[in-house]
Length: 116
Length: 111
Image (tube, rainbow over all chains, first blue to last red; front, side):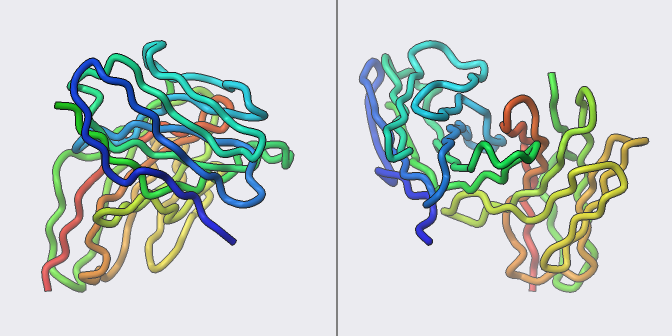
C-alpha cells in the first residue's frame, strides 16, 4: 500500500510569485486535506477536497486555492506569495463515506516552502 | 471555535524518566481527540486517539485519557527512550473530518 506522497520536498520562491504543490493520496482514499505548519506552530487547516470539489475551508485568503483530480490526487496553489507563506505544507488523505464520524487522516512528509 | 491548548515550552528529560504533556480543549460537543508525533524531517504520525469520554488511547507505551469533566487529554509515558525525542501535537476533530492542532511540544530525551 502506497502512502501519501508530496512534491516537491523543498521550494524557494520570491514575494509575488505563484507556487503549486502536489499531493498523491493513499490508495483507496478519496479525500485530501491541506494544512499549513509555520515554524514552531501546529498545523492549520487550509481546505479539504472531496469528489473534486472544495469541501470546507479554514481561515485562509482566496489566493490559496486547490484542485482535486479524478484519481484523488490534489494540488495546492498559492498566488502572490508573501513572506508569511513560508511554512511546511502538509497534505493528508482519508476515506470519506465509511459511515464513521471521523476518518483517520494519513499525512505526507510535507513540502517546505521558503519565500524570500 | 474548537481549539486545543498545549503546555508551553520544550520538555527535556533523562532516559527512563516519566513524561507528561498537558493538553486541554475547547469544543462544542464531544470531539474525537488525538496525539500526533512528528520526527525530524518527517510528516505527522498518529500516535493514539480517543473518540468518547473516558476512553483511553494507548500506543508504544504512551497513554492518554479523554477527560470530559476537565476537557483534557494529557499524554503520558512511564519510561521514555532517546528514540521518543520528537514534537508531539494534541489535536481534535471538528466539522467535516478536519483537525485543529495545538502548538506542539518538543520533547528531548537525554541518554
